[in-house]
Amino acid sequence: MRGLLTPLARDCEVTMIPSGERVTVPAGTEVRVLQTLGGNVTVQGDYGQLMRIDEKDAEVLGADYLAQNPKSAEPQAQPAEGTFDEERVWEQLRTVYDPEIPVNIVELGLVYSCKATPLPEGGHRVEIQMTVTAPGCGMGPVLVDDVRQKVTGLPGVKEADVQLVWEPPWDQSRMSDVARLQLGWM
Image (cartoon, rainbow, N blue to C red):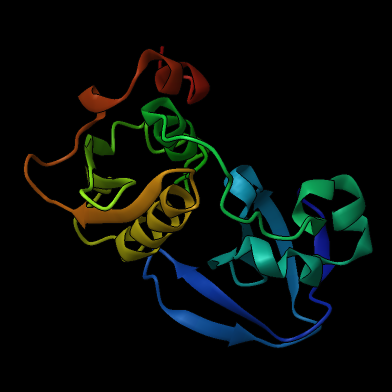
């Protein structure tokens, strides 16, 4: 399925990459699946434009896509029961991917800090500072929303404050060795 042209089964709202603009793409538009990491799908339109299809809309790619990517057909998970565990926060952060780069935001070095604070009424507030690979990238707010949604779905998390920061500026030295290997830079 990856790399093959696939017509969209219905009109679908997508996020344009890298602008972050939301647009509706009409049914029948042919797209090529480029990346399916983290649940969302990065596709390329017939004029080369990159778009992100949200996980909840993955069925727009048709039955063949869903057969090869069964997780996309599963309903969105409800907040899990249990106690708070900061390692689970980091696990969730590792499921958020830059839509243009097949590496998660932790390995890319986009997460600058993650701090959990117990709340007086119970549960935790998680504060995350993160950045993007380029200051003009419109996907920053989209990634912030992804992080917020995934972190607030964790047991014991009552609040998630996710801030997009620009200082210090991101550069390739912030990437882990894992990311460098994945991208063939080692």
